[in-house]
Amino acid sequence: MKNVIMKNSLLLFFVALGLFSSCVKDPEEDPTIFPPTGNFSVDFDGQTFESSSTDVAINGSSMSLIAIKDDGSYFRIVLPQDPTVGTYNWDILAENSEGFSLEYYDSQEAEPYVAAKDDEGLFASFQGYTDTAELVILEIDRTRKKVSGTFKFTGVRFVDEEQTTIETKIFRGGIFYDLPYATTPIVDPGSTNFLVKKSIKTDANNVISSTEYYYSGNKLNYTLDSDGTRTNYLYNENLLAQVNVFSGGTLKEKLTYEYDSSARLVKFVKVNIITRLGEKTSFTFNSDGTISYQNYSGTNLAQEELGTSGTISSSSCIENTVNPDTSELQVLSSEFSFDTKNNPFKNVIGIDKVHFAIGDLPLNFIGNITEQTKQIDDAEPSVFETRTYLYNILNYPTKVIHSNGLGELQYSVDYIYY
Image (cartoon, rainbow, N blue to C red; front, side, top):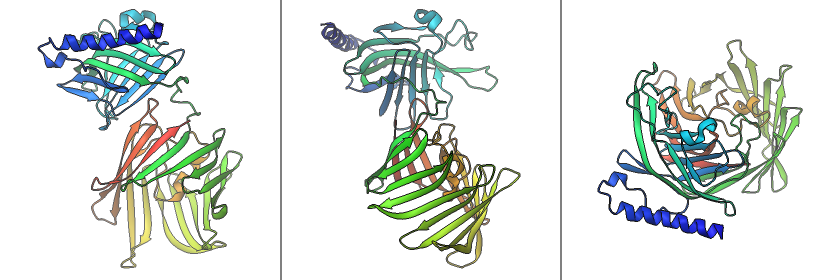
């Protein structure tokens, strides 16, 4: 009976919004009427933000919500206690206000517009800022695991590094309706238990493939591809020692890794069992933090023919190679830019020591690559690839879109986590 009353109350609330807004002259004050299930929307700057995806977690100690738009902008709401139906603001939360957060990011890397107290804290001395933050929880359906509510706030942020000037943005008529939520505790961003469960790749022709990941603790045990390929990962203590790739139950490829006494990768060998061909890369660690390498090719038994060589740093790869058209030596340089978020595989044991061995990857394994430029000899560098990300509330990618230097879609990858 209580749930029935609550649902009726919620319906009457949105009906009341509709009746009230029909009498309001100023269209900027009109809230969204009858939002669709799973919708998050809010008005500001004469426009309406409507989410393309949401991520909500509610547990015994907090509620966190993130709502993302396709252009990368997003809202983040955090309530530092187990939510109940009612109104929340700075005054009501009082002693438990630490962690209360209403934020808007107009891009992934931008400083957010935040709801802040106007009587204490960083923004209290600025005459142009007045706090209007309010979060209203209208319904929590613990059976269906859905939550609905409204919010508003005046966001504020500093314009300069000296923190002498602010800018504000007013967010009104915010509504989230029937959003699904997870009941598992929110994982701390520094936790080592956040692991990829499945990746789904969609190419430019909408052809879909996927990989599922299985672990023993934080060690990668094996993966299963949608085409039936199984890849087994073998460790020597905490170092990845060998990777075996099977197709149809038949061993197809074998990758082996060798390390020095400081647990640094010094040799990587990849052989194709079917074609009986192989390649070997040796690595030398330099005093300036870079790594030099030499790549050899040959059979599955021996790889002695030197092909390419180069140097890898945290943000670049410089390779000495041969022009396939002129057979002349050339230098191919790649420069990389990164975000400041979490690499989806950062918590997998051993991957950080070998990820660069595959080739054309820098040493940085903390963030995610956002752009790669390439340059041949002294020619002007050009953009080779850009990557655009959507993130979950813990700043792990949930989707990455790969585009070429012309901005044309190449493929995208969606990540699902345990």
